[in-house]
Image (tube, rainbow, N blue to C red; front, side):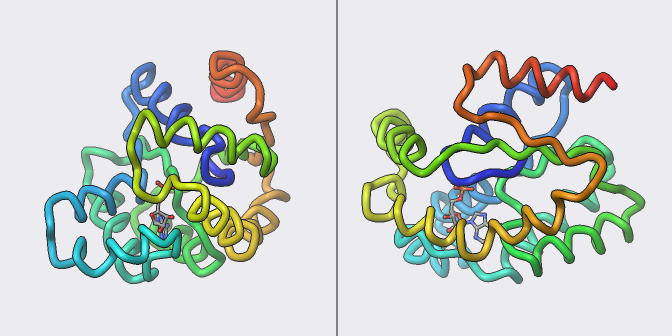
Length: 183
Ligand code: AMP
């Protein structure tokens, strides 16, 4: 699942988890768990996340490696929020390859900046995320445009790349994704 913050990646991933018993690998959720559990990593990253800045590649690489290597999740992973830069995209290909897995589908949920800001303001009330305030949203969006969007160009020529209008109703998007998965 690819797209800017607030595009609906997590929502669509959760739908697929319920329907097909896939596994949602959200690096953001894993990182927030570390903060909540006050682990060593959690202490290192809470300030960065609070400011809307990226966590170091080494930390997220390690989190995804543990899941990819786990037989339980083999060929069932939905990546949500990873890869977020070109280095991570290359690392993901390498690690998947080493573990006899591959990327089967890429879904790009396209939502423009103005819509995202409105959505995240709503989410802040529901989820109380510290990085959902107005200033941090803008920072996260800028980070997306600067370092994450190039990943889109890296993948967009793939046969399995699908761009979806992320402003459509949640159910309509889910339906589109399911149609593609059935092909
Ligand atoms: P998310 O829940 O995906 O919006 O992620 C929340 C925050 O976690 C981001 O703004 C980053 O600070 C951090 N984060 C999540 N995934 C990554 C990643 N793949 N690489 C670096 N930082 C990440």
